[in-house]
Amino acid sequence: MSDTQGPLGVTTWHRHLFARVERWPWLKSLEESVSAVSQPLYDRHRDNLLVELMHGGRWAGHSLHAALSDLPIGFWAGTVVLDALGKDSADDRGGLDAAGTLSAAGLLAAAGTVATGFTDWTVSDGDDRRTGLFHGLLNLAGTALQGASLVARVHGHRRPAQVLGLASMAVTGAAGYVGGHLVQGKAVMVNRVATTTGPTRWVQAVQEADLPDGASAGVTVDGRQVMLHRSGDDVHAIDDLCSHAGALLSRGPVVDCVVTCPLHESRFDLRDGRIVRGPAHHPQPVLPTRIRNGWVEVRGSLPAARRKKS
Image (cartoon, rainbow, N blue to C red):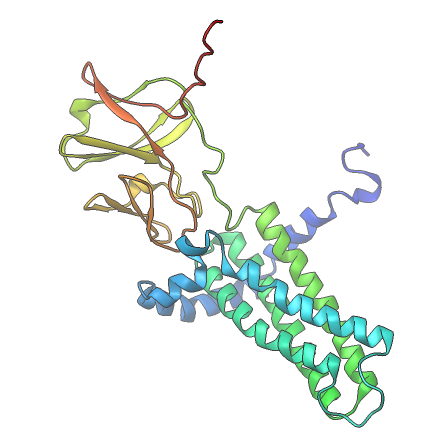
């Protein structure tokens, strides 16, 4: 066995695990059923400001779900620590003790976490959608166990409450691992154009005659995918890959210099790359343009200024 895989495949087990999860027939069937109900509802209300706020969008700069998820995990971890130290309750009289207070606070935080996570899930696709659903199911199971633990605490059943709380943390930890795979392993909800640069010189992109007024085009210049749009005498250029999920913006409609992503319908202003409507969290990088000798030319990062000779 090669050194890159390690003994017994300890460095590759997670790939095999998630590949198997994505092929589970019951998960695929459930995803299709949930999508059939949720997607029309989301599409009907996607212009609602509250929906965009639940994504985090242009105001937060990243998904709200990722930030909110720390709250229930932190509160519930506190209950486990109190249980382990015997600081949860002095007797079995019941009521809302210190650990129960943290448990209840975590359940309140979980409501917002679930809502924002579900909103983000509606703008996922393919295998990511099935893995995301699995992540959500684990979180719901962890929340249900925590709810049962809180009920047991309130009724004075201290030992069952501790066991249920510990089980809740274990399941929630597993859900967090799946969520980490989605973000760091599958690049879900990350800025797809964060590292795009270049070209460092003016490069011919398309002949001016091939880009009449009101027309758009997707071109590749020095390996960078760029969307061009002409509005009168102005030619605008932004990264063609949508920062949200990597769809080609040049395939989307343009109205008043605002392009709509054909995949999840984020909207960007072609003049400055700003987000007009989410679910995108990051604006589109803008490239300078010029018309020279019958060609539309673009460039990316400017070269570093030369030092003056002393």
